[in-house]
Length: 89
Image 1 (tube, rainbow, N blue to C red):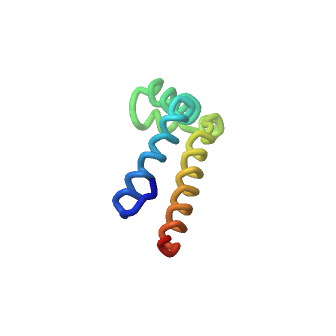
Image 2: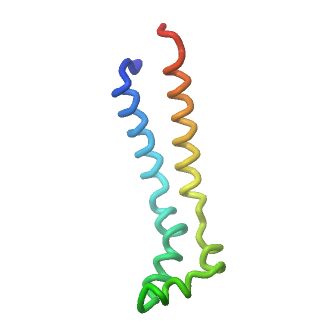
Image 3: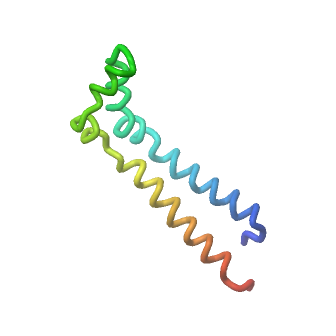
């Protein structure tokens, strides 16, 4: 069923992005946010958390899950934009 209205296009894009996020949310939570949460959890206050947040912590944060969602969303936006620019029919 072809998408005909801007509203349908946006709803479809939102649905596809939601699927991409759901697919990688476990990896994102464990690999990207996990090290950051451990630093915050172990600190007594905000100043201590900032002191503990060093280069080693940032290196342990794997952002591949986040990159995958952003890349997939960007590709989908580009394809939808191209399809919208094509003449009808």
